[in-house]
Length: 526
Image (cartoon, rainbow, N blue to C red; front, side, top):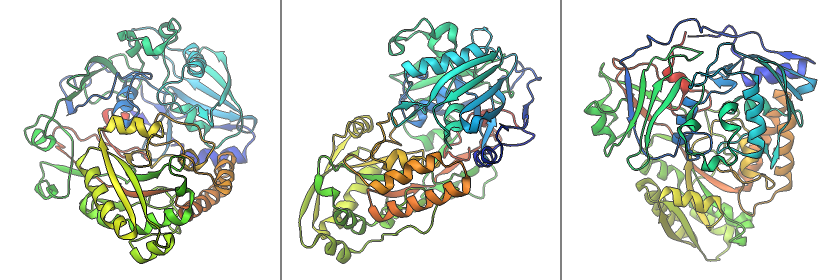
């Protein structure tokens, strides 16, 4: 059970790092005395399946459904709850030398799933190994440079991590990396070829049982020797589902996202509970200015902005369940959202004025989901009135993701999560010197360059005063909205339905949009 004496948010940390030469977090305790052996032995949660890759740090697909299964198996130094960062494998931490040294005190009596003891050697090994063998989700690279210079073992339960600069994002970046067991991975030269079940041994609350890529099934079971909060769920299974609503109503799965069209059947019914998430998943239209240099003209980009009816797309594609996305990218509901950005609604005559009678034809790459197809068709209809013709190319999601990653497109629609994370996401998306990422939620816009955006994006990262950093982030959003380097379309607000009589532990992290992805959803809490 989590008993946090004093929750430590990222903003609180940043205030303290400015105010003190040495920064220490108050000891935050988690009740680890109760045995996990009697933890709800018969409660199995079943969720809709799908193949999202092998759930270790090197083989999962770089989207949430892949990564968050992995994170149930592998623990990190820090975790996140509804308010901010909380202690996890590290029971406390302090920051020294103006943010260039991080000291983490590790918990006692932590075991790996194979029964071996966890200690500081594993932490040092993990960060050394990740430098030479980057995992799929790698927050330790900033502009292509590895942020950790050295990891020093102070004793078996304490490490000091030296970083390359004082940076507002480093606590989060270090804290969320998954720790891997030295005694297994030190023998592995190529993690991509390591397919043994030993690659799935972590020290998280759930241990790996099975995975079938063809059927898209996974099974995880509660680890009885887990160091931390007791598991409320004995096993989690992801199963094949053709119709999620039908499967839910038959009791085959325990949580679904329901469209507004049918939400009424679950309202005013004590059997069900409805939970609505924050709008931290969304769609955006990306311009490839390398393939189509004419898109470097801000007037053409503004013609797109005024020539797309994002409100109509929200109503007809999203059934009104969401918000029109901010042209400054950071969505409403985010603690760093700036409402004073430029706002673009459909205005065909204004759009035409920006391109002054010129005609254009572009190929638009999309996934093959019904939503993306309809979205593209609605864009095509209104842009045609402006003088911009669109040829739609539809492929499966993984092919689309790969083509976008390799910049093999002219225009592309992509939907993803991550809109609720630290506002350094603006640098990851808009700064021209950002290195490529494996995640659809980050990676720069091909061919886009703006010197002021580059400078502000870099400046905010090194500004440790939260209020000053907020001012920079707000200015960035306003500038981005005027520049229109891409077009955020809409952010989803989903209706999740479940039966509280079966399970009522679902929660949302402060920066994330899906309850089923959150580790704390499956653990006892105070």
